[in-house]
Length: 249
Image (cartoon, rainbow, N blue to C red; front, top):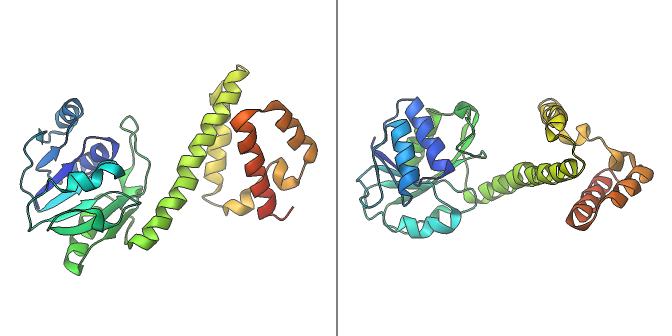
């Protein structure tokens, strides 16, 4: 199967790396950023181009959501399968006469962080059974967690991911601001963070909740509020209100 990856960012890099590790040949990686493409090409041994898109059977578009529609227009071949990797776009965003699909990996990607690809869930949506089998097989070669999902469900998958990943990481950033302000090494909090995450592998998150809000400890809540200001104070109040409401305190 001839496969071309379009993009040079985090998702493109990691998919290219995952396929390469499993000896799945890539015909080309195509994009606009020459330096990033060259770096990926040199590391993984994949031909790259910024101006000539090769013919292929499968194109995987790994670019930002706002760029997917425009990028999809450069694929003029009709007898091919094109998939974007977005969790929040319908496959119909793809603007071509080819067969449209979605190939969504549920993970946060950074080029500098190595990943265990077999543990990354992939969600597949296609227009027909044959294309579904093609993408399910492709994903199954790099991951042990592959399932079919339509756009309506995928929207909720992406929303859940924002709560579970993006929001949580923002709270880590806010926490580091506080620790930095008091010259407390943030890495001292990493065992606590690791245990919190590890715990929900075994316990339902609702049952694992601890802290002053779930105990309705007004003394500590008020003391913390006096230490905060601005957006951090608003976040603190909002989340504590949500915790209290969940546990009907």
